[in-house]
Structures are given as C-alpha cells and as structure tokens.
Amino acid sequence: MHPSVPLIKIRHVGPSPYPGNTSELNFMSSNIVPLTVIKGAGHEFIPLPRGENATTADFHSIRTKTESPAHFTSGFYKIEAGPERPASYNFEETKYVLNGQIDVLDEATGITHHLVQGDFAFFHVGSKVKFSTKSQGLAFYAVTRPVRSPHPNLKGREEDKARL
Image (cartoon, rainbow, N blue to C red; front, side, top):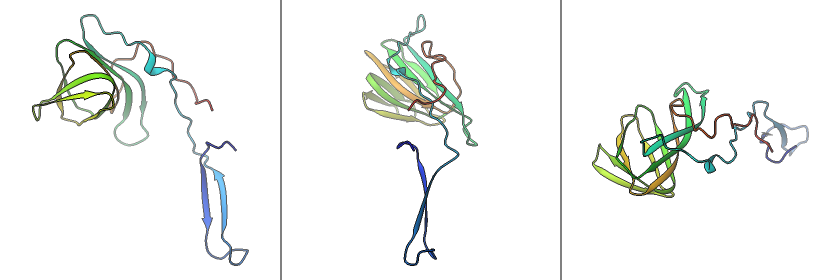
C-alpha cells in the first residue's frame, strides 16, 4: 500500500467478538480518481497578441461533476503597461498574483486595488472592473467558464494520470 493513498477507516464500537475491545477495518476507496498534472506550466512563455498589452492563457478545463457550474477552468493572466483592459463578469473568478503588479479598478466602488505578489482577488458574477499596470503582472486564475483562449505553449501537455 502506497503511503499517499487515502484509506477509509471504519471503527466499530459496540458488541465485539472480543469483549471490552473495539475493532478497526482499513480499506482503500474504489472511487479514487487520478490527478491531472501539467508539469512546468508556470514556466512557459505567454505571448501577447499583436497590438495587445494583456491576455489570458487557459491551460486546463473540465466539465464538473457538480450540477453547477458546468466548467472549471484555470490559467494565467498576463498584463503589461498600456491601456486599461475592461472586464465584465458573468462567471466567478479567483486571481492570485504571482509577480509584478496588477491594478484593478472596481467600478462598483470606484476603488483601485494595487495587487502585488501574494495578493488574491475574487470576482463575482456582475463584477465590472478595469485592469491595468505601470510595469507588468502575472496571475494564476480559476474561473467557472469554459476555455476561451488556450495557452499556446501548453496545449496537449496534460498528463493522462499523475505519476507517483
């Protein structure tokens, strides 16, 4: 048995074949699903489209097994100095800044948030923002929508099954 394989433990309390004792049974779940792994995803170059100063680069999406939402997609957001990039949300999104600075103008409040490495932001359905930066920024994101713009250097890089 591999140490990273989860076990289900059943602890029997009550009448026991051995008076005064409890018994414990360990077995592996038959419903274990392998991980999806994309090695080195954060090190791949993300080209900006010609004439653009920001882009998304989706690199993994699944149709969820839950009722709603139907998709869960993750990727990288890259922005460089240039014009503001407006965004209106009809899905949820989380962004985690990996490096640089990403400025986010929240149009609901008029507040500009200056996100730097280690900062996290959550965008709700109905959020309306403008992204900008004075230098550059890179963030990891996860969204409840299907792939829109595939990462050009990670297409087909998902491993079939995690390697132990």
